[in-house]
Length: 77
Image 1 (cartoon, helix red, strand yellow):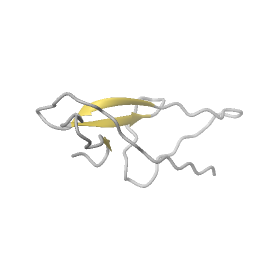
Image 2 (cartoon, rainbow, N blue to C red):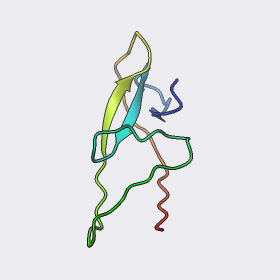
Image 3 (tube, rainbow, N blue to C red):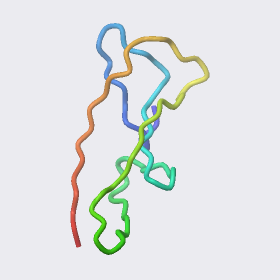
Image 4 (tube, rainbow, N blue to C red):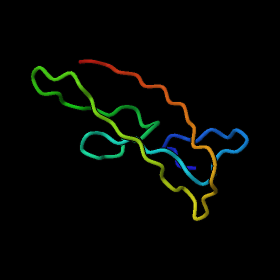
């Protein structure tokens, strides 16, 4: 429904009208399928913090499983 979110799997019993937003440590949405997102690390810092939240993508949301899969590629420059 929203290409910037992670899609919920469509298995039997899955929720509808919802996606999963991945957010960086500044609580900014990391938009999926847009190429890349960059983060500057402080000297000696090797930890990246992310959170995930359900986001309504339709006016009507039905209850159910909210399972999803996402590939995460990391490039260090």
